[in-house]
Image (cartoon, rainbow, N blue to C red):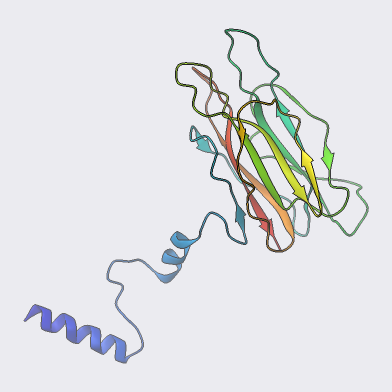
Length: 206
């Protein structure tokens, strides 16, 4: 009898153009859960290190895109010392249609160790995709996680100045339109075998 009333309720709901939730959440909640890691808004790679937590998202002001970047790199520390390598990524926001005067910067997490490299700029256009160089888990040896990053501009590649440790992964998807405009990094807390920056994903703006 209970099954009969449930079936009747479903038929009435369908006839009225709606259906009961059945515990699946609102349509917006279902849509949010279904957003893939590589879509028109977010680009990511699969080879990032899985240690630490995601930091805050930082985005360029509206209408601006990342036209350059710099890296915070800790140099090699020598035998029996703890290396962290890549600590931070800074994006330089530009309007590709106007001269570069005052240039805002965005950074998800500034990192802990090392110094910032000189900015590297697209000769034309803006940043559109990236590739991450990561060392795999070293077991009882020293982990460094992410070590370097490359970016593709419109028709050119900018190669980061990180150390040659680990392996390059596959390129991310390209921003479907516009270019990269925001960043979020995954950072390990200080303590023990430090790795600093582990992974990164970027946001695209049309």
